[in-house]
Length: 601
Image 1 (spheres, rainbow, N blue to C red):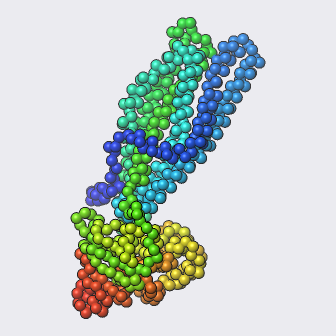
Image 2: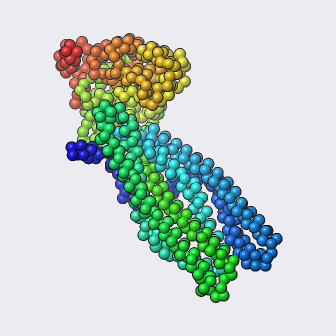
């Protein structure tokens, strides 16, 4: 029972929160998506022409069969019968060939649409602020880029062609039917009003069902993504059973919602099939018993064939409608992501920041994540070019916020952040960040080899430059011990490396960019004391001539800095050198002495 309560409590997490289903069917999403189709309108028109002639070629089949039965077979004319058989084979062959050509074109167009939408999505995702990723499970973002785009592309390529194809089918079949026998044609058309009524009743239920499945599928993908990334933590805390129960809930919800959506959608298909069967039977009954004079045997057979050909495109259109419902639901999510505002972007009058010296100034800076709850409260300080500044203080005091504002990962609420007396809000982001080297607290290593991970900071770096950077941060020694040295593959997120090794590689990546402003957020937190001492020697050389901001909880690593700023309550409580702050016996002194006592214990 206790286990069940635990599972129930844990299961109520952000992955069980569905996105709103209240938005109505919005045709504007579909119209907007046609921008991607217009780029390939030439190929689409060609595919449409092939489809049109394929339909016409196929529709001659029943007329040929009627002629064969009523004339060639009735008169025993074998040569004429063989000619008609050849014409029938030709019509079928031409129809198949044109369909193959059409399929090849739509496959190419579909893949191009996938490429274009994903490119737009990815470029936009690259610009979105940290807060966007902080507030959303990454799996829900991933499913939009991969699965939703795949589903949408098929509708925008094959779906559009098939829609016009089936419309052509209906028009031409109707024309051929009335040419052959208008009385039986009216019998076939009699089932349409019934079908229209059924579709109108099912439409809203169907839309909600598929949108619900979209939500459940998104929830499942998000949970699976996080579970895979956190597999190690799961095993450490023996959470396998609890996590499995949550996953089973996600799987069940996804399966249940899909089956419900299919069940609702099948009512459309079932209705079309039932009406087509009834109408088909009515054609034979009316042709033999009701219509006077009675239709010929060949005409009845041909009209039976046309009845099937008339209702088949209606069935296909019903399936297309099902896909359209899904597509619009997916488009809502895709365009929702593309329309997500980029909070941090270049101002309309932004200009490139010239080569900087590295002077940094905060003027009365206020910053709030949530309105009314300031993280930095009218902060003021000025750092000369080439100075090394350490930021210390309790957790949540605003140290990381300060360095994030210097790089403009967030915009300030009020005040000014200046670099060389230039307001960074009026500089282009690329010119600002390209002159900075930032190593965040979470050392991220990309899948690939070590040399490419280090070159991420300078894509055109030579092998010698990479080695020099690695030697500076004392990473060269451990890299050389690996089986392929700098060419060693490190797998996704650097799974083959220790946390300390990942930090050293990330540090080399930052250094190789040769920044004028160097920002280190807990850069040495996962490095052993011996390696830290060696790396400190390289850092001392590196920081010469560069403005450096260092966040560190181990005060032994920042005693050499030109200035130490103790931050608490969103303001700078104390500022000075290590010796000056110790003499004052204030907040920094208390922090230093507590660490010294802990080390002694």
